[in-house]
Length: 311
Image (cartoon, rainbow, N blue to C red; front, side, top):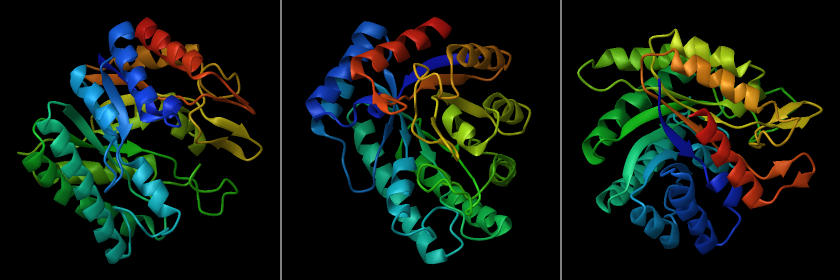
């Protein structure tokens, strides 16, 4: 069952000055009734004060994603990540996750509810089993940390694009994950079985990143729902069409070539509503449309309208 709406405002407005970004968060809450947001936080890079102030003002909740952390550092150090088979790089990723958790703790202390802190594996640089073992260790350590320092926050893991390293589509618009969906389910299941007294780590899906993988998104969602791992949320977005396949550019349903339409959103809702467990539904779309750039106002209003129509 669907239990909430989440909007990734930053994907459309991240290029604007902080004060203008803040105005869109205020509008999302006041005009569209949406006060839970997906937002990226980078280690050592605090959110702009204008954005923090408006999040406090509207009593917001956050789904904090670390995918930008892995993508930016990963461009310099491909071995970096929580699933790294090189222990020094795994430890660096752990420290960065801890730094983000510290920022989340500070936001929580100021009244902003941190709903999830969403982790990612990092790129593939070795064999599947080695990556899975490394990721397992990272999740075990970080689950306890987050439990201790951030009230009511739960770690989650995003299913992201895991194309093989020899695929022509470059990183970071593809190939961000060391583990496929099936391997990720198996790894997270093992983590959840380690300490049954603690909360179970769920998965979160981004529709567009499954498109990049070449996975029919609805099939991936159904695979999780039939597994032993809880699906905490689905973020709807499309992708950018290219000669080598889709790119992770979060194109909206306003782009007819994005692989995501209003009909896809409706089909996703039907599947999620069949589950007895609580699942949030969100959107995160850029203003990209092929070679064009849509107006921010057009994309933001279209996202809010669709979310409110289907949920």
